[in-house]
Length: 380
Image (cartoon, rainbow, N blue to C red; front, side, top):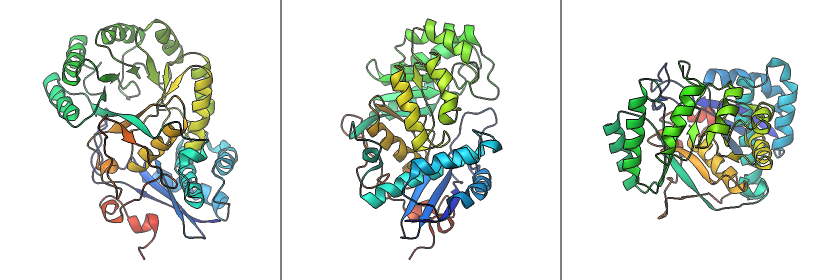
């Protein structure tokens, strides 16, 4: 089976708020779908966390290395792409685009063999996983109402992030966390994401340590991105002194960038994003390195339905990954596939066991947000 075309289409029209200093508009493109087409008619899909223009530019570079190549060798092909393009700058738009191509190749391999990607990655440790509802922070009363509604829908784990947290004063920070714990109840998992990768983030080590101690009083399961994303020494000191686990890593790409964080003990929980880290192949390598060093991997998933499906397949194949992020209220997750995501009675999300990623994109729904014919080809 040979690769005949690689296409891309950005999602626009329903882009959710990111909580960033430069806030997103609904027509901003931050998620781009990639499709790899083959001479046998199969099409694999992947997702990239960057704008369509950058993905298309990267694919112009990658396409000569892909056309005519074996479509059933994802890891070898992706590693060739990384090595061949190293001089263009490791970790930028090229790596992001490779993420989507790599996942699409795994999807193709699963379709061709009739197996879910998780089984092809080595075997399925689980057939369902706990998703945590991920949402932006708000003022205490509004946040309490939002979380109460999500809890009534069956969610049992929650992450609140960004918004005013760490950006106004410490009294408001605690009021926000107290309202969240009150809303979700004493037994639910509650995580807090400071959003230290925000361009305007100004808090440092001492704030992070004080805040970690406050979060411990509310039973917070982890404290995410409390520091700027390059402050590895401060992360290492914080992780040693914090009473709550410290997580991060969503902005890093390729396994080489994660190595000093994992080996240096900077994180309790590492959070690579499969849609920009280099894809399924690269995330699996990072996961096993983390496992060998006693670091848990929970994928970052501010994502699309394709990205979520990829995270689910990885969660099935990694022994320690028992949680996945689920951005609530995003049509790019909830409204792209023929089957809707549904929590079971325990608040768990079943992992698709069909071939490849185990999902089918709904052309009519997808057409609301992108040029579906340019991505998948004209409907027959």
